[in-house]
Amino acid sequence: MEFSMNKSLTEIAGYTNWRKKLILMLLVGSLSILGVSLICLNFGVVSINPKDIISILLNGTQDKTKNLIIWQLRAPRIALGVITGAALSTVGGAFQGILRNPLADPYILGVSAGAALGACIGIALQHVTGYLFASYLPLFAFIGAMLSLYLVYQSSKISYSANSTGLLLAGVAITFLFSALITILLAISRKELQSMVFWLMGDLSAANWRKISIITLPAIIGCLLLFFSSLDLNALSLGEEEALHLGINTGKLRIRIFLIGSIIIASVVSFTG
Image (cartoon, rainbow, N blue to C red; front, side, top):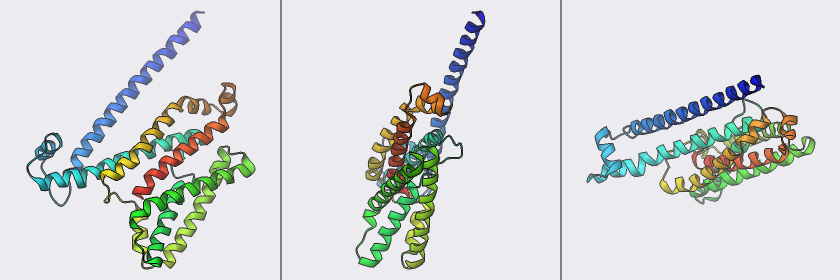
């Protein structure tokens, strides 16, 4: 009895220490992001001293040029970068959970490859038709990402009933397929080669508050849904049988995490490349 009580007290103490470490990491991470963001606001063709930056952020300034540089050029790019990084890292952690593979990343299931193919097709069509598709590139990329999502899910069900092995193999196969198609487009679209390569490298220069408002909603909602599934993912990390014994439908859990994560990736990659 005494041993059981000591064990329970040890587990409670361990959980308390874990929560303290989590709070500390979140605090340090948030302060680091804030500090780096303030530093980044100072870099560019026009140098703005820290005092002016803080003044512009808090009260604004009579210098319209500096206001424009901070609020319309630099701040949107920083905000988009922070949102993109936070969303992709959250999805990466969730994918590591459902695939039970610490090497898994947000791109392992082929959604980003689908988005890249969609964007390249949009750029190629701009040359073929003569119609400017630049403003519709995020739409092309999102459609490509959703196509990849559908193909991966359907392919994984053929032999593996959408379990982690099936999703992983299907994702790798679709990624290679779409990468090959992208390579073909790069080879035959010489006039649009620079635009395609530039998009594939990723770019935050076109960031604005409208794009951020479009990305933020699915990113926040999706990340919250993933957070609420964290206990189920922890149980799944113990193994399939253990999770089933705890009453978790592992098949539905994987599909749910896969869908949520893929939509987040599609939303983010469609605008950032």
